[in-house]
Image (tube, rainbow, N blue to C red; front, side, top):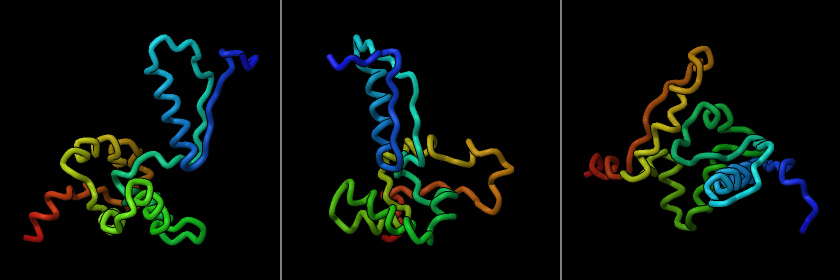
Length: 137
């Protein structure tokens, strides 16, 4: 219909578009009977996860003039809700629920990043909302 060679299809995106390109790639793989196989996927500084907002890159770039950590956290929180409670929890990195905490093992950068790149950053598992509430009581 569009005169596109299905063997030469690629997706690409930057920032939030990188997130969308990754989601499209995953969805295409799950689609039953899908005939188009992506030739390439190019993600440029993709926004891939909002589980741990204290990774080395968030720490390194927390005061960058164009996209400081507070603005990035605001974008993430507003993506989910306009309730400012989530923004405050995300800024404190205490926004994970018991359900989402099961996914934290997939964003533990200290297990994926070679030791030589750890520098002065120390990994600490983000608190789970239920744990935070228990500590306040």
